[in-house]
Amino acid sequence: MNIGIIGAGAFGTALGVALALDGKDVQLWARDPSAVTQMQKMRTNPRLAGVMLPEKVSVSANLDTVFGCDTLLIAIPAQTLAPFLKEHGTRLGGKALVACCKGIDLHQMTGPASTIKAIVPDAQAAILTGPSFAADIAIGLPTALTIACADDTIGAMLQQVLSTPTLRLYRTTDIIGAELGGALKNVMAIASGVTIGAGLGDSARAALISRGFAEMQRLAGHLGARADTLAGLSGLGDLVLTCTSEQSRNYRYGLALGAGQDFDTGTTVEGAATARALQQLALDLDIDLPICTVVAELTKGQKDVKTALHALLSRPLKEE
Image 1 (cartoon, rainbow, N blue to C red):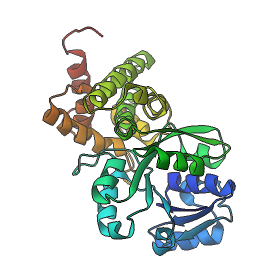
Image 2: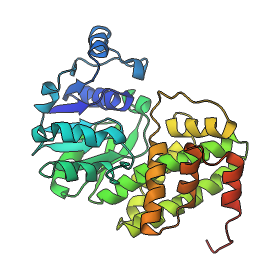
Image 3: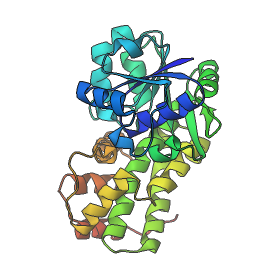
């Protein structure tokens, strides 16, 4: 089985390592030719320190090497997915395209798999999501993820192909639920980081996570997602992980915001863009998403932490 991976960041590389160790041939594409040369020579990726690339992982800067694969994992940031598909969509028709990013496109206002379907309608669109850190996958720590595909036959095929002895995939046909769980948990991770960074304590974080989950369920239900999807790996599972670990970029970003510290601008923080998309979506759909709205305002510098906290705590008292 020959699998192509578009994007040689930490997560794309980790998936390639896990699949190669399970005997699959992996074609890994990176945009930067100099980075490719370094990876070919050293058999390591600086974005995944301490992990050796197995022999079955071939690294290239030539997209032809991955476009020849029938199954493609697209591990690039959510905000760059649509431009990539628009540029190369004519070569992707008929293939199984698995989005390995989380977020809502600021212009399309769609999740990753829905973006694929909209731009490459004759592709088999899917999304791989759930509670996972790249380093854990790469070193073989047990990890469970969700593979969501509207066509359950294709989903079952992808489940078999992409599962390994340490990477267990559960499948669903609920693409909307899987997309929303992965997108919204990043926003909640930023909010959780702000809570701890500002010194508000673990009790406040627990409240934030639980109310954030209620917010996720509210939007997902409105958009037709299934409740069990949000309660599964792609929703609650991912939410718990990213709201409690400093391995999460979104959580670390929130910590810096809460503490009034600078954050590395070169680090991709999908939750910041997603919060802004959700703020607009809440207005368009007339849905109450207070945490998403506050996070959007924080990331745009429209509110400081003290004002944001007051905005949440001064809301009218209500039933749970």
